Length: 244
Image: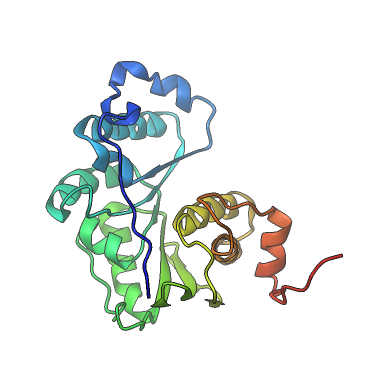
């Protein structure tokens, strides 16, 4: 029952005070396939918010796929400030990733689901997925669906919508959690890898959910597993037997 607590010590950091002149975004985006950004970055400072916009504009000029993990953080800004910054940035986004809190506080969309009560039926999300895709032109809308029974026991799955079809992943019962910080980032990394390499959105989502489930078993922010380990879990091997 003891939750993790995060401190954002970003004031006067390099990214908080960087200027547009510090980056040649056209050179950065030249030849790139994918640009991913997090909602934490524009929340750090007004300068960082402007840099995020410039980076997105350059990505679009160079035909780069843009994804965002909405990542609302109430310790960094209010929902009013978040929406004033985040909504205009959505015009550049192809792939939108976020949980139910992110969608509501960053974009103003609330799912029909009792998340606090642990009821994360994917049916409650379909309406807002369609509405978000229609309003912002997203190619994919993706949400993780976390059931938080305690700090060390979570249910974990996700859903994706490509404008035509919904796909809901298998569910993982993660108990005990070693460290859940970084679970969302590992999911984003997994879905990017999946959408770039897998044959369809379902396979991409299963890879991402499995990658993030494995991250919950690792201390620290980084997901120290191989593609092969993720694919083994996504394929149904959750026995945890020692491999000799």
